[in-house]
Amino acid sequence: METAKEQVRQILSMLPEDASFEDIQYHIYVRQKVDQGFADADAGRVVSHAEVQQRLSKWLTK
Image (cartoon, rainbow, N blue to C red):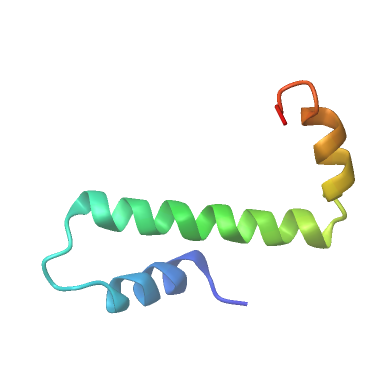
């Protein structure tokens, strides 16, 4: 498993040389959230599509 530092290096290597601090922060943030989502899925912390529809049914209009 890659360390956080290795992941940041990988992100930096993929960004253009003129990337701003904001660009770099955004890409690190997205990577962190994606990794967190995979960890949640692996741990079974997921909600089925049907459950989401049920929870949001009062907000959805047809």
